[in-house]
Image 1 (cartoon, helix red, strand yellow):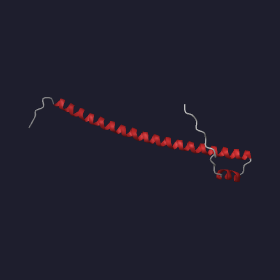
Image 2 (cartoon, rainbow, N blue to C red):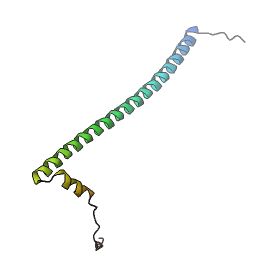
Image 3 (spheres, helix red, strand yellow):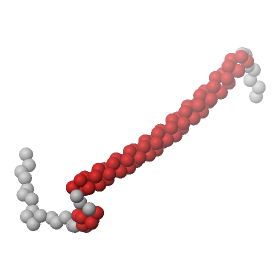
Image 4 (cartoon, rainbow, N blue to C red):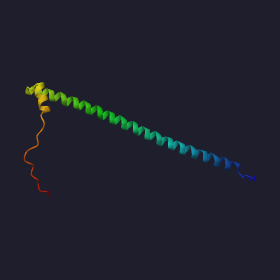
Length: 100
């Protein structure tokens, strides 16, 4: 079945447009994949940064506690005893408040 083409330029243009559309679709998918990977990397960097900041704050708090304990005259044994002493719940339960 041989179909004569009246305008070969139109057929070539149609084929070229089809290839461009296929190329655009592939480029869009590639861009979406790249954006997702960039988002994952940014989240990983953010989590790592937050973890480092929390660690530094904890170190500073520990240093302040040591400084405060030295200023109050507590030695290491007293601090260990304070840490080992269990907290006792009050004998009398707390009174229930009235909700408003």
